[in-house]
Image (cartoon, rainbow, N blue to C red; front, side, top):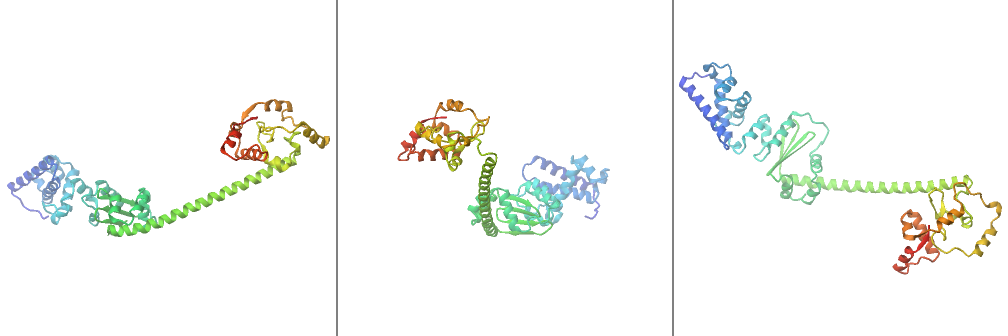
Length: 395
């Protein structure tokens, strides 16, 4: 603005209008943005013509502080608002497209380049505007989210909207209500910034041109992105399931190999640890199927005696003893309790079901097999099984 010689009356009139507008802005709750434009216009007029010098001030900031009680930052903000939002950039009137904006949003938009103003609507929150400002000032990581499809995919995942979006992925209206129920929402990742509005969507690439798309276009892209995501998700779950199965089979084979190694080691050490006179007559295959751990970690065979079934007649036992040569009878290791001690402990009774609770799966399976094989356990009815489980047996 060119310097203009002004009479004292005109100068006093400008100062009076300035103070009246500031007073009006402080008293009003509505229409503040129009007052801000007028205040900015008068301050610019005083500053451009250096009229503050007529009252002995050295700057517009010094004048505004003394005469109007404005801080230097407020004075600068009023001038910037007038330049950016007034008709023709230098008038007392606010541009029509900004009539519905609050003064706080107009202030937040001051730092935005003119090309970004189309990304803001009256429904846009002040925080979203500030986030756009931060995006413009940042240095986003290059290579992240190279295309818009990846951006949209990451949006749904990060906002935990995938499941809901899948159900409405073909409905633009329902998708809009899901994403931006208040009429505005923003999302930023990598070199992209996306702003959702009620009637449009703006996508900006860092330091690039703002692109506008419709909700119909966005819905089409969403359907494609989510269908691809679902296929990837299903494939990933299948791979995890297959991997779990492979691990289970590997663990099973390792367990089998470990058991075989233990058996070979036992044979290499003499093969007689844990044997008694009673289990020497049991075939080796049956012994390996029926062994289980005792308190002193010595394998103890599951026989008809210790599962609560009648012992064989004394005559049969004597015959079996005569078959075994004395030289074959191993000496009992010190860790194995005496036969008398074992017999005393075995005389204590316990319900079969209670004993099974403390047994491993393989031990329970062996017990069921032995009961079925000895005809003590039948499966003719549930009652038969219940009675068998309720029977007393020796520990």
